[in-house]
Length: 606
Image 1 (cartoon, helix red, strand yellow):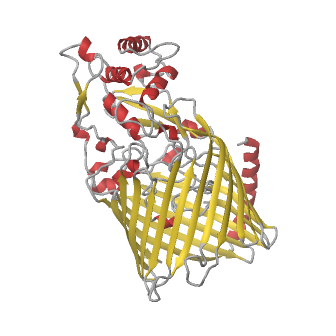
Image 2: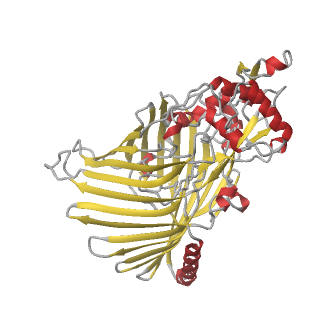
Image 3: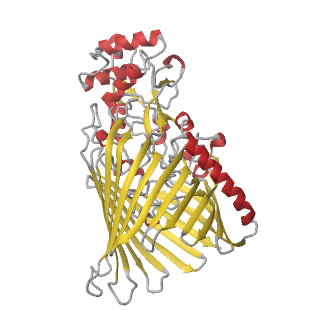
């Protein structure tokens, strides 16, 4: 995004906020809030395999396929073993307290203000030694470890202002200025048009009540949003908002999704774009009975892309590897298993690391060349591996604690490429016989197109994959009364199709990797379906929920639950996340498998 545009927007935003501050002081305020306990506990013995304490190779001896046993027989081990002492089982995934205070001010007929203070502390590290001293919330983007501009974060708590804005509404014009979330699109799970903001995965990942549609997850940022009603049927809307990336769960935390054998360098990539702004426009209206919307955004991808980067670590400086931490990969078997798990190319990833990041040390460089020759790797025109076995030999030679360097941590950089996203949506309400399934059935269609979208290369090469991405969702909504004794049942069915990435935005070229030495086969497309059902009780004191998500490749998320609302000020929610994984490194379930859990929320509103 151009710096000149950013300066203009920042100047305008500052002027409006100064003007609004005097208006806010004269507001008529109303205050509300909540106090909530949020807990989650696993329903089986599955631990997060992405974490050190849950690594599937902890205490497992695997054959050393490197050169060590040949050149140092009796000294070099014939097997390589990750220490079993690292393993820990957890009994809790979350043990949190949330406090929210909201203030709404009315300042005459045209002006209003909204402030929301959110405090969240997760004490899981104090009651479960599997997460003792683990950082849950601090991020490297800015000073103090804060994930967003209006946030204070420490290892086990966050205090932030997710909303702090003023509204101006006069006739056909509406303007909102300040820290805010922008929610576009109406699909559950599927973010087809919901592109303005990234997501914050630190608080229970994406595993809250599905019907809440990421309302607590979108990353807020300072910005200006405005709409103008051109006619009774058509409205034009636009926004300018400072870029803020999606916030990942931290290493070794309960809902971490990146193998902790990686160190993710995020600060440098963020510093390059931290003063940039995202822009978007949307046109909404209807032609006859068909509702339509058209949108375009110019943004930095908040999820980011990843590549190998220099570790700057001692003798391995220049390479993306770091030795001697005890937190790295211990064997080729572990390397390839976790490559498939992370949807990476284990063979190509090794080649990219060696070709693009040669060591600065001549001794290390010469030793690496000798190992490559001894294992049968090809050195011309660049390093490659004619067989997976040759790559395995090189890896185990590096990991050998006698002739090699021992366990190695991989360093990867996260960057945020710019992209343009174009979208279209339509909705139509069917009319049928009274009380029939078609009567008042709402059909929605959402489509987005991103030309030349950049994806992380499964090899983690600095040459990113560039591909046009098309995503669309078909949605049906219906309130249907099955019994005169109960309120209507709310039912939603959805289908998602994507051409270049999966549910989490990962390139399809990395799907289907083997658990052993080899490269992924890839997928040509990604499809998923979702079903959501909500049934209130006759008194509305209870509501039963069921949400199901599947990707047709063995990945399932089944979320049954119930809400109990005995009074205006009290509410209890109890849900389960039942996650199934029956595929071969090609579905979403595998990366969430440790989140099979029951979670409950006990809320007091005031």
